[in-house]
Amino acid sequence: MKAEPPSFAAIAEQHLDDVLAYLVYLTADHSLAEDLTVETFERALRRWNRFDPRRGGARTWLCQLARSAALDHFRSEARRLRREERYAVRELREVPGPSFGEGLSPELEHALAELSRAEREVVALRVVLELDGETASRVLGISPSACSTRLSRALQKLEGMVSADAVA
Amino acid sequence: MLSPELATELRSARPSASPDLRERVLAVAAQEEPRRPPRFTLPPLRRLAVVAVPAALALAIGGAVVHGLVHSGGSGRTVAGTSAVHSGTVGQKLKQEGSAGALAPLPARARAIAPSTPSRLQRYTASLRVQVKNLNALSDATKRAMRFARLLGGYVASVQYSAPKNARGGASIIVRVPVDRVQDAIEEYSGLGTILAQHVSIVDVTKAVQEEAKEIARLQAEIARIEAGGVTPAERPRLSVAKARLDYLTKLKAATVRRAELARVKLVLTTKPKQAAASTGRFDRTMSDAGGVLLREAEILFYALIVAGPLLLLGAGAALLARAQRRRFERRLLEPS
Image (tube, rainbow over all chains, first blue to last red; front, side, top):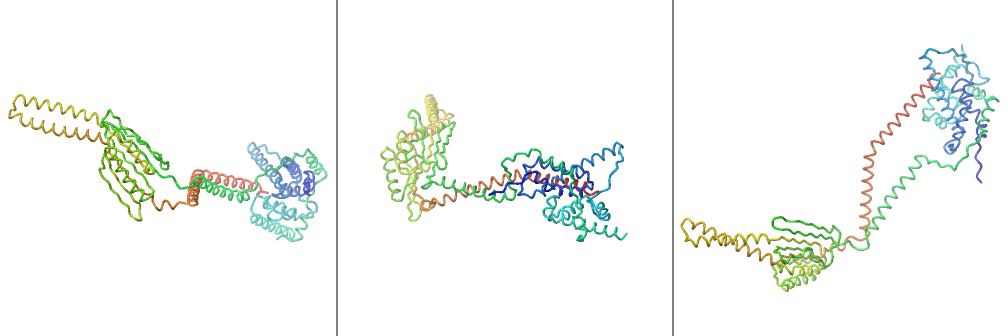
């Protein structure tokens, strides 16, 4: 007998934390990550018809949608910044310090903040969400070897910065 | 590599959704789930190619074989034949060429394509190429053709006959028959075997003969006038030229009329080629036709590639460029922290 495919609500419940964690690492902004998480699930609901489990798991698909939502946000943000620079009406905004999770040591928190978005997202996918190399590379839209190179560079930087902070 | 402690710390401190966020997301998820229509998605390109390429090949080869089977037919090929008619006047030769096509068989008994016109003087020539079964038939047909020419009141102008043991036999007969019986001759000769080719030429010489007659009458009058007045030494050369011309024209007119009374019919008889009769079996023809179709398909594919190739290359180039551009832009967005 064929099993009934899981409902969208069940999928959302199951992978909400994964999507949020990925977006927190990518954006380094918890409240923005929350907004993008909601945006991701709205997009997912609209495209639920097109989801094909044969092409990858729900978590991979949601992470791809989350990445696309984040990139759209970065793009519009970059445009906004350019516009504001042009008209010199840049307002000073209070940007809260990044928080990548409760209970992280200040050294690790600081080291993560120093990484680029690309480096943080590969750390999130491979270390935090524990995706395998092929799945992570599919989410990032790059080859597995490029993914592996990016991960090792990011971890090296992270280790280096954490050790330096600890010595200091 | 990351130390296990750091990895554990990262995983244990992994962000989790606040109740507020969970509520917002579940509210989104609780919206009416779009009904899932029966999913039809194209299979991935590689999987599609694995099925489509052999299917296309099978279709091409199958089509070629079916074409070969259908067009090879049950028995041997029909005998090739051509037919042509030439007719015209002396001044203006009207040429009509009616080819029956490379593979269309001619009727077993062909009537003369352009019958002679009794009221006109016409130079009628006809030639026929007829295939007979074997050397015995060739001998019989040659004799019969000669006998029939005499029967019609004509004569045999020439005969060439060859019957080698291991090659095709052949005979070439030229007969002259009265023009009003030429149709009978052609009908009779075409019944000797399978017609391979037929050629008829008619040249109307009525006007030429009339002009010759006029010129003869004028010369006769001129000679009579000179002789009536007594031939002076000065007129003597003129008279001899006129007489010589009269003599020539009289002979020419007589020859033209004689030629117009008798049609010239050339009959070429051949036996069947020994190899050709035994060669092309149905299987060989099927394979040959199928090969031809496959070759044509390959040509079409090649032309299509030549035409579409640059467009495909341009499309692929544009797609690659767009992807590179998108990647570069994404990298710029993701690099600064």
